[in-house]
Image (cartoon, rainbow, N blue to C red; front, top):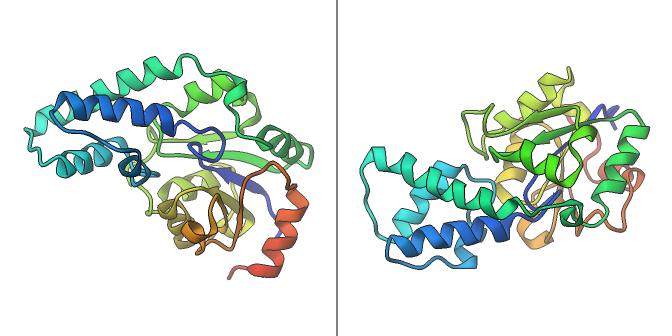
Length: 225
């Protein structure tokens, strides 16, 4: 297996679970526009940018708005979302994540964020993990949404590593697709039936360590070309 130089993490669903806050804000927006928005709908927005999410929601609700109104609505949703995440703290870090990342730092593996979120830096600061990240590539630094691999390719480039020397951790089907397209080792975090295209799938970071991930990837993926 290739020498791993970096681990690239998605944010939502991998490091923290902010889905509940997104759901609350999107549902409030949908309700104000005259229709409802379910948690099942919210699941379909994993890894999707804010504007594309809004366009999908409007389509689901059968609503058409003027182009200039799109940005206004997206900003309104984000304002409500930001209000909600003000309360976030280290208790919101998903089980095992802090330990796993600290172990990477001890092994001098670069820690990179690869997320569509435009609030990633704020959230990492709120939960106390910001100092552990070497590079942040988020929605403020990308123009293409997953499944385009741009966010991961930029993360690898920022630390001077090739994709074959990086592991991407993703909880969304589109994120896994993006990582594979980019030529990265890919670990799905969550349910195997959703993330089966990943090289390996782990339920969470709670009972697994970095060496176990490497061993499993070595067996499942071998060396990427």
